[in-house]
Image (cartoon, rainbow, N blue to C red; front, side):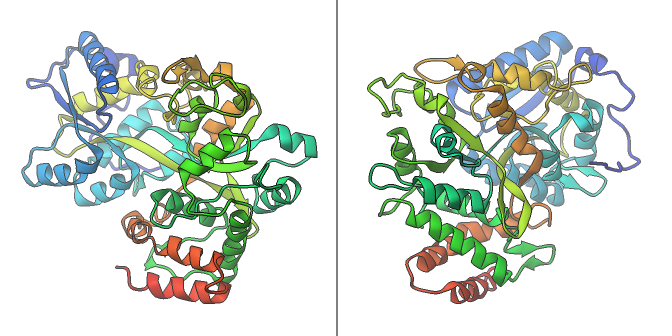
Length: 452
């Protein structure tokens, strides 16, 4: 990815990274850092990082926890009052809107990325933060939604990995044998955000989005019907009932599902490291047997989109327009370089490295991340639980990560579509036989046209 940067002051350009991290300039009041990682153990790790940063640079950092549900309103209020913190750790949905509103200093963020090295970051994570001549914020970590599947059963039947609609369908035909084994466990509970998340991934896989650069976009009938027919296949291979993440995990853990869609937060549970969610495939809830039999796919492709797509959640460091820019840039550079492994260690099972390595080793941070312990009641590194090939696929999903509206500058509008749950409701009506494919697409377009 290439970018042109504005001819403004280059905060970091031409300065060696080691000098940035070891600079002795001291801010009079220090930095204020807002973080949504507000759980006590995660907060303690960030405070330890702030102390280490101060020891190296003399710059004080006040780590301030902010609940994610309150982050939007608190940031808007602080902006109006001219009292923004210096750095905000925030989710994807705020990145572009905050840049457009003047809350984020895009030049400062772009300079940090340029200094750290554009080519050291996952392209997808950068693309989702791209603005004219740079980036709205610095990607920190992320995770990709996964198709989790029984690799051992696939291999026994000579099946290809479920990375396309066709391969998933073929696997269902070969493996679906209820009630002993369901081919899939699809999300069908329309008022659950889980169904929204799964559907967005499946629509993206076939190149279908409800928004474009001009706003709400009319859905392509052919492509959308392909998605609907595929999702009906998934639902027919699932148990009856209102299904969401809970049932899909339980059935997979019991060895009664060939495939599910889940987040990477399942990885430690699969290996028997969390007593609250034990695998029940055998009599030992601490066994890693199921993990050893599991494969994952992050990029799914539909018949009208051979490149496919990975659905991802990415988090960013934003430098605000009220920030002490030099010190904020130094803190982010530290957190993304010398302190990056510690940044990822806050919750490694859900914090995939979006910066893969540095100038000396292109995969240094991926290697370090794979050795970080995961789990709750027991701990083990991902590298001991899963093959290197699987770890590579987990991380590489961020290279092609997508979300509705991001590339079109319409993330806020796409979020309204998702929050309305109209897609969930109408897909469920199609699956239940209330409407046919063409009627469902027409109903979707009519409902979408009402959203502004």
